Amino acid sequence: MSADKCRNVSAVLRRKEFVSALSSNYLCLMKNIQSSLAACSALTVLCFTQTPSLGADVKGYSVLKGQFFIQTGPEDLVLDSDFGFSVLASVDATDFDLITEASFRTGDGTSKPMDNLGDSWSFLDTFETSAELDAAYPWGAYGLDFTTVNDGTFACDLNFPETPLPPLPRLVNFSDVQAVDPTKPLTLTWDFAEPPKPDDFVEVYITLGHAVVVTTPGSGEPGAFDTTDRDVIIPPFSLAPGLTYSLNIEITRVASTNATCYPSGQGAAGTLSSTSTDLTTLFLPTLRLLSGPTNGVISVEVLSEPNSTVVLQNSSDLAKWSNIATNAATSGTNVFSVTLTDQLSGFYRATKP
Image 1 (cartoon, one colour):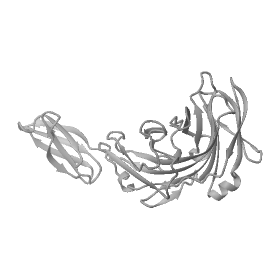
Image 2 (tube, helix red, strand yellow; image 1 turned 180 degrees about the vertical axis):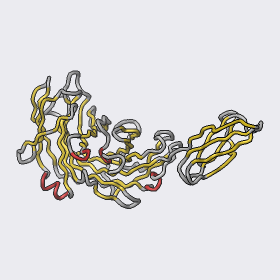
Image 3 (cartoon, helix red, strand yellow; image 1 turned 90 degrees about the horizontal axis):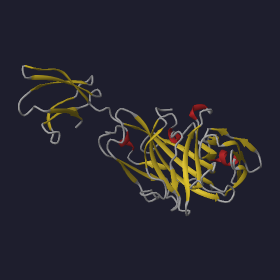
Image 4 (cartoon, one colour; image 1 turned 180 degrees about the horizontal axis):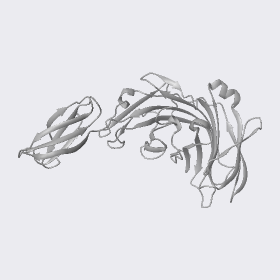
């Protein structure tokens, strides 16, 4: 795995809600790292909930079938070897330690134990092909059985009718994320392998390790994306220099909901397609004064990437900047000697052309 070990599902303890069009109910797509599983296994949790009632123990519960791919080139999508085709189940609590036990019930009545993640209980099973996933977890009836501290014990059923996986997203301008200048706006453009359905919803988010750094709004929120949206602009200075992030594009399709089993939150079943790729930001030039002024001359050092062109600029008011020298040192260490004059007094900075 790359610098972002968890790739498509790396947003640890992520609490991003996707507001649905289902009156006051909320659709949330949550990511939770399950550290007990090998290779940073993670759970993507699809859940419909109402705004939790005061004292409610559970936000919602869900069963999700998904496919996870990694984009390695402009046209190249490869199956994520860690998550591939997965079934994911979760019961999500409103706070830590409010669920005492939980299990995932499959169509044949088998009860599978779930892992306690503190503020949720989760189950993950991964396969190499969609056929293997569907054979092990066919379309039909599923259930989540859980006991809470204050609300009691529940056995909630979820009907999971055959629901094709949404089309895979693909980043169109793949080359643009290989060397991103974080001081400038970044436009991300995507398309799909085939037209999505009108009620599918899309989210784009960028993570660094376990932290969500940038995300588009959830469904129903101001500015939320529908399936006609194909681009987003990441504002300048949203990302730090010299780092490798994970860029994720996801599309989700709801199959069914259950609003009656648990009084304070809904359950949902759905399918998900997720594509991730590395996004690398440039190491920005760093400037320091080496010496001077001596005989009217100062020596300025600018550290940058090897063979990277840097521009030394001068300003008298921090508003208007003028280029005074350019260099591209093989080592990345650029040294400038500047003769001070009335025109070259004031402030200095280093930038890229």
